[in-house]
Length: 115
Length: 282
Ligand code: SF4
Image 1 (cartoon, each protein chain N blue to C red):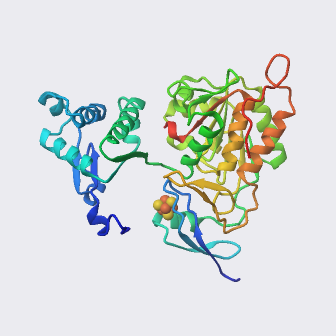
Image 2: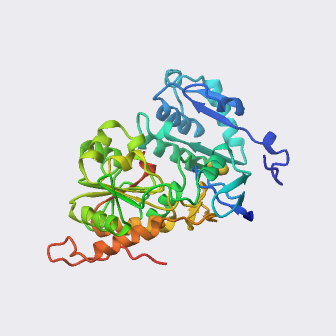
Image 3: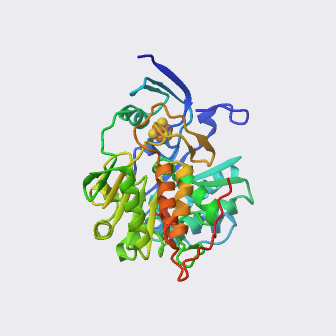
């Protein structure tokens, strides 16, 4: 399989968010992460494109994505004071959706910053 | 380290002062190490704020911080003499006695230093895109974290709406966790409450929190298999360049679909109508 190179890739493992990483990868995994620190290298090399986990779990049992989305929506809708929390290891686009979610639910919204 | 027009000798032109309650590994990298007494951060910052403005501070007050007047005077001379100063602060300041007031005092100190020279303060971040979360919440609601929409408009009150406090008091009756693993990091009473209520987790891995949740959805890891934007610690937005294709959907897609599913239900106001407080501008 042919190796491809991405220049100036962004590492989001820690809060520094280094933006000068050179990645060597094929379709399944990343083989080399130049300029990344020990933590970043481990983060890049440990992820693969394989399917390691089930799509979704409901009460510990495997479920489809559609079922899980429906269950999540129901739990959040029925709650009086739902909490939306986290948002560190995710993209800004997803964070914006989370703000909309908390707004629509009339709930609480918080990130790692408060820790 | 970077050499520049104004700092031609790189690291040698820079001074790093480390303030901590014990001598950590970082002390080796620092030029000066100041050992402050535990829980005396607020006092030290307040003394610095007074002394930069040439106010009187008693010897006893200085002794309480664990430092001497000579050391503090030297620090102030260096701070005022710098062309550009930056204070990096972390959880040791914001999570010990005084909490938010410590951060507030430090930010005031940095602001007041600008009467003498350019000075800024920057929080040290833990995981991934926390800076982005701050920026997005500020953009959408006006506040960086600890927000409640329970009155239909955003209100901000850390201590009341911040997660650990909410969970320890048992205020919320459902939790949606994304890109975080509180089940591994939070105090036990908070974890116990997450077990009692329906918890929903979005994560690329099955985490500690997933194991105590009612619903877990696997998503593509950001930056590796999911595209998007992440903010660098100095608040510059960076495009992510995913190298792999994931069999899982992105966080963005899943949250949007949950939003759509909830939007189909009647709104929580008595007549079912929905005021639109925040209009995302894209
Ligand atoms: S390369 Fe290292 S320092 Fe840079 S963002 Fe990744 S983990 Fe952090």
